[in-house]
Length: 343
Ligand code: LMR
Image (tube, rainbow, N blue to C red):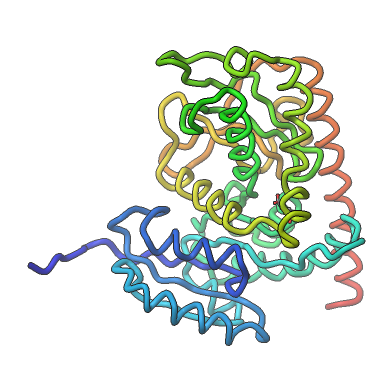
């Protein structure tokens, strides 16, 4: 009657573990929906000292769920303990944007956090750790984190744009009157910000048993090049204004999807959007974390090459790239201040 499982537990760190995104994400991980239904898990739940009591409460709830895969839970405010030997890190915690705060203010608060997390990952995590940054500004936080973890390949640091891709799929499915599972391969280019570029040019939709282009499915190319783009770009803000706080369950679900594809691989003919270190493909600037369409094999992502893009998309890609270069320069100037003043 007893079942044995010979797989070694996978050590998974989640920062911001007391927060709303983590609350949903942890449930998805523990159910086996990210790493597989036979993969045992050790969870390392990390948050600030003021929130460790809340994290302990979350750990109690996870125990009460009786997840068979959850073999051990550590709740800590120490990055050294939290990142020790982890194979996966979801970096969910950051300083959130308050009303009236500019993007630079947000960077100024988050750069020291991601510098410190990069340094701790460098010292304590496995060298093949897969890092997904969810906290905003996610692309630049991922860039800063990677920069402070020189012993870990830069390819192992990614930023979440899967949420934008899922938003795009939902909008197209609704417009075409099909189920969302019928839509695939909308691309998100660039930054996870209002400059992101949702591109349905190469997307496919299953309509009456046939695969057709998104333009055919929605019967309105003008919508795809106009309102659709705006809706995806503004969806995060729309959720904030409706809920009074930023996306939580959808961000968690997208983070789980991102990591699942990174670990398990993409399906044939499928690509997914991930913020990854740019090699300059599609005229994107190099040396920023930029969202591209990728396929994944054996745990390694590769940018999909050779897609045709018309000038309107290339112009939008350039704009989002410029924003990321500005963020990078702003982040580096914060770091220079940090090095003088904080260390
Ligand atoms: C989202 O896309 O929902 C969030 O990244 C928005 C935000 O600023 O928190």
